[in-house]
Amino acid sequence: MQADRDDRFNNDDERGRHSTQTLVTAVAVLILAGGVYLLMPRDKDSNDESPLPEQKTSAETPETMRLAPRPSPDDAILAAPDIPVVIASAPDVIETPVDEVVVQEIVVSPPTPEEIDQQLRSAVIEAGLSPGDSLGSAYNAAYLLDRGVSSIDQLARGLVPTRTSNLARPAGSFKTTQEGADYWVSRDSYRRYDKLVSTITALPVDTLATLFHQQRALLQGAYAALGYPSDALDNALIAALENVLSAPTREQPPALVSKGAMWAYADSELESSSDLHKQLLRTGPENTEALQQWAQKVRNALLNP
Image (cartoon, rainbow, N blue to C red; front, side, top):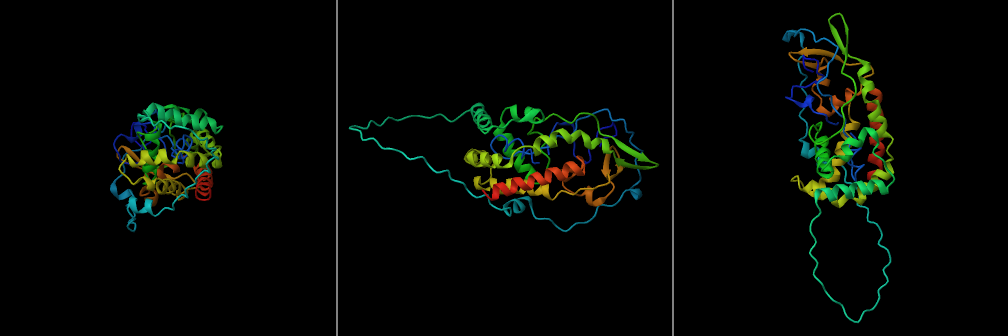
C-alpha cells in the first residue's frame, strides 16, 4: 500500500490505480456471459484515514521465506482436469423430397465484437440470469468475450486481472488498526466486498455450467486467439477455480509492516503468496470461504455434467 494512503500490498507499479477483479469473476461475469469469469475489484487511490508508519529498518522486516520451486504456470494449467464435452442431441429432421436442388453460394461475414457481446448477453437473458448491480458494469462493457478469456488465463496463473474488467471498486477506503507500533488490516475493510461476494455466490452453478457448454466453441476460439491451444481453455478454467480454492484464510486480520511507500504482510508466507491469494485475503475470511464454497460447486458442476 502506498504511503499516500493507497492500499496496495505488492511492489508492482500502478496496479492499485485500476479498478480490477480477482474469482470466480472469471467465474462470475464470464460464466455469466457464457463462460466463467470471477474477478474481485482492487481499490483505486483513496483517502485512507490510517497513517502509514515510518519505514522500518531491514532488520525489523521479516525475510522472505524460501519456498520449494513451483511448477510453471503452463504446467499447472495443463495438469488441471479436462471438462467433459457435452453434446446436445440434435432434433429429428423430416426430409422432404425435392425435384431440383439449387446450390447457392453464401458468403458469411465473421461476427463483429459487438455481435459477439450481444450473443453472450442474449444467452444470459435466455437462461434467466441477471448480472446484478455489482456485476453490471463488467457485464455491459465492450469486448466481453476477449476480456473474459484473458481474465481466466490470468487467474489460472495466480494473477489479478487489472485491465480486463470494468467492475466498480469497493466503496470506502482501506483501513488499518494500530496497537503501539504494530499494524493490522482492519475488519471494517472486509465489509466493502460483501455485496460483490454475495452477488457472485448467488449465481446458480448448474445454469452457469450449462451456459459454458453452450458457448464453449466461442470461448475456445477467443482463447486460441491469445496464442494458446483452444482445447486448453477448460484446463485454464479449472486451474483458476483451484487457485481460489487453495487461497489461505486467516481468522485474525493479518499483521502489516511498512516497506518504504508500501504495506506488506508481516507473515513472510503470506507476502510470498500469489497476487490472487493476497487479493482474496483482503476480502476477509468469511468472504473468501463463501467464494471457495461456491467455486467448489462450480468446479463440480463443470466436471460432472
